[in-house]
Amino acid sequence: MLGIAQTAARRTRMIAISYAHTENISVHTNSRPLILGMLLAAAISVALAGCNQGKTDLSSSTADSTVGTDIDDTLVTTKAKSALFVDAGIKSFDLKVETRKDAVHISGFVDSQDQIDKAIIVARAADGVASVGNEMSIKQ
Image (tube, rainbow, N blue to C red; front, side, top):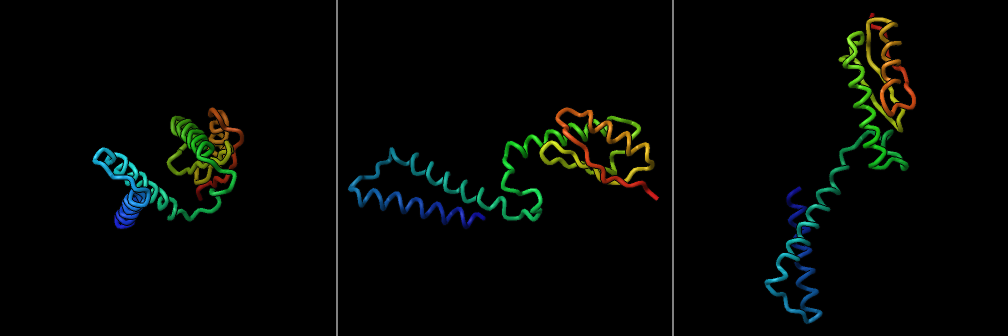
């Protein structure tokens, strides 16, 4: 990753110097912060471009998903998980909570139907939850 950033930084520096020579502009020492800023911006853009390469779950990467909705979903998930964790009647360690557009989906294993019903009620009561999907199973 560092090699890519260094290559991008060299290219940016070469473009800046090339531009200065073709436009007959002298590169002063005062422009050093500008060049360093351009190099930093290039390095950050290259680093961020590679951040999404390892994502394999295609179900959550739809065209209508934005950073804002992802943050909102994460907040709703956290609230639902917290509510489930606080309730002593639910063994939330065996449950997985996911949220997509304020629709919470709970999956995992519980000891009884009462725990499933209680988990659904508690999750629905969490702030921001529009609906609750049940994919919980009773342990055998």
